[in-house]
Image (cartoon, rainbow, N blue to C red; front, side):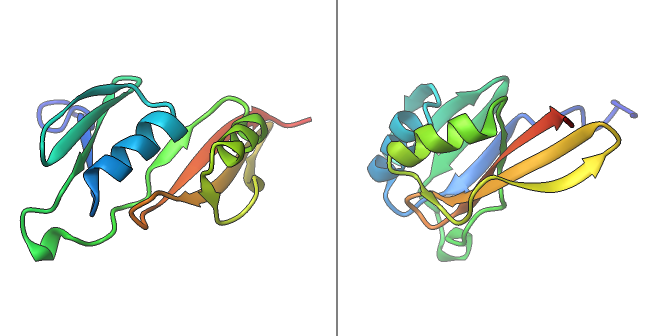
Length: 126
């Protein structure tokens, strides 16, 4: 990859309607470390990638975000824990692709702001 221009994704922004509610969800239900927050933004750490929750500055930025795929080791265990913690899932963990000896599993969920995200896990096929 030519790294003279884009080197990596440094931050992902997610628009929110209620910042306090969203902070609670990402911090207490998804267990992401809160770096800091202001009146209109909150920053979380996700293994070297910063997640920014923000109140939209203008109406045209108030749309739902792109899907964020959170990598996890044990998708079924994480799903069960998050389910107990009140995360609203759209489906259950399921196989989406098999490439050689690697299976990719996913499950999709909604955050408190109506954004759809996913848990994903790549496991060795049995």
